[in-house]
Length: 353
Ligand SMILES: [Mn+2]
Image (cartoon, rainbow, N blue to C red; front, side, top):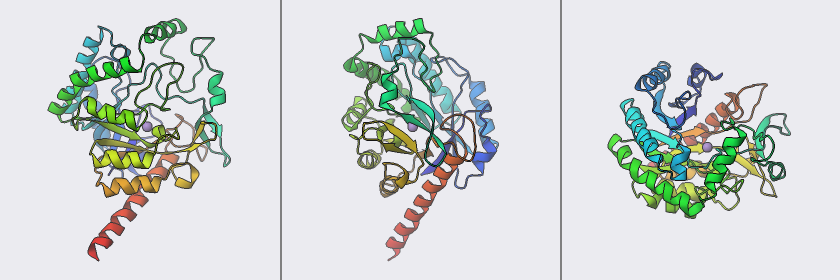
């Protein structure tokens, strides 16, 4: 397990040096943030970022994300140019020594929450998804204030893109994903970069848009679209775990034993009775997932890929990007490291007996 931490570049209020001070930290997870989706990242900017990260003694191995242009997801003829650019990004990143690229294939919206600063019982704040709040949101009516969404579309553009998706149901999305993978996976293999798709968050359709990277049956189908280890998963426990139909421990066990997980996002969520959920501290009893079991199956399967604590709460008066403060993610990192160290020592003890 290679412990990693997401960093949003020089603008991030969480300094690289602070991340470096978390024991057992190995690698930074970052991206180029000032290039429009679909365009080529310059070799210069990639190398500058690499230098920045390596200057504090951390590795520049994981990119999250290289975003996929909407025209690829829609299967429009213009996808060709964006796929060509995507391949060029894979090649440029491989020249900088990158090992894993995380991406997702969610139409229009990325992860969705209804509130980013819900005050929990202990006074910390967290990201939450309340069905009751979601029911009141309509992207096409009034001003959409979807928390955390950068509103890169005007209202008219959003209506236009929703209209384009009217012809894209789940099966069409599957075939557009397959087309994309058949193009890029051979390039990733040639560059020795593992592609790792992030599950949809939450893992079901919202606002009438299709979502397919959602459950075990679909992950099986995804891995077979191009049955090659370079076509793999970012297994995000919080995203898959925000629906009760997913048995996260089982999925982590299954896909890590198949060596198809290249990147782990470990965080906890608390499922509520009506299907809503709240992000919680990493500690198992704080949420609905058994983080110890998740780490145990990874250890059993000799997982040696990258792993990062995912969203944290805001604690100790910290302010900043919701989910991406330093303090609670650092607590998560240490909790994960403690579990891993225990597993290492107990297994060694058992082997010696
Ligand atoms: Mn995640």
